[in-house]
Image 1 (cartoon, rainbow, N blue to C red):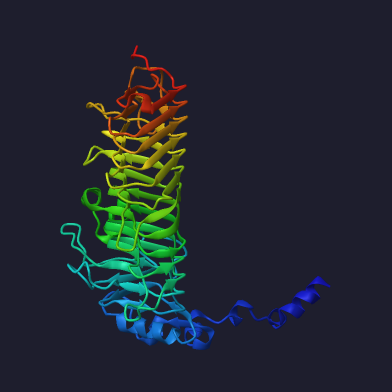
Image 2: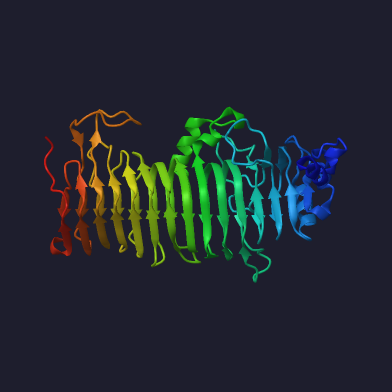
Length: 462
């Protein structure tokens, strides 16, 4: 009975014909626009990286825009000497099922060349409402590690600048690899909302993601920027040169106006600034950030301006190096609003873990602080302005015997800098329930404005 039912459901089997053979091939789908798949080859695109495919890809996009559909980018290298407008309801899709590594340099690869030395020029791909880019690798073949030059944004989510009444909503970038973008992905400056930036890997050189004028919740998840992606000969990369350029120039995640922004599982290595919060002509940011990280940075997080509701940052990990500010968290003098760190870790060879200069409310709860800098490290937290709360946090000490990536080997003498310096300009502080390897060393320059309770007393090193 079971065989009979199977034969009834799949008559091709009864005839000895493979069921798979009855499924249209991709080329057949591409020739059937009614099914909504538009193969760029059918519009004149030629693989190999020699011919300009921009007109062919745009023709495919224009054809799909009538009723909506998928513009298919097959496996191959597709050179683009111009820029593209991804029109409403159209989805540009390659065949990479996930972000790819720097090798084997295969899959669906777009090769933009336009905009060298014209940073303010049009983005390689502009996205309108209800569009997506998925499954592609983007590599600038004329960018050179020996002479890195400015280029415009690779992807920009914005309304049509020719229509002032238009707003761009629900655009998605997913499973995309950026090999060597000078400027990666941005939203705005026109109003937009509900962007979804998922599963994005790669090397970005000057700016990674810039969010601005997002009027309805944006989402950024599973994004990793790393010098690895342009460090391999497969894409004519060089580890040392790319690492140095990123650490001296890259601002990885920049947030202007966004109401609200949800950011989860993001990471950068290295950068000059890992996460930067600014105020544009459209406004500033509020949002929640979970599982975010920044390593080998000058400054892991630079907060210049935020909305009053501010930032909730949980489960973050931050590591600065001995370059530039050499500080994980910097709150600038003009910044007010609320910044909450919960269950975050701060370590590395830094001058300070946090320097607070603005009139903001800043709190650290259940956090970990340490400093590997042996050359006169300053206090872990230096609070110059605003209001500070530090609760149930640990101030650790560096072990001289521990090898990187390994557990401590014993109770050796360690280097622990001062924990918290409350400077005279600070309005108030509440420090409660904190401990440290040698206790918690607090320098209090604000007297009775500080509430100090149940902190482990500091003791001299044995």
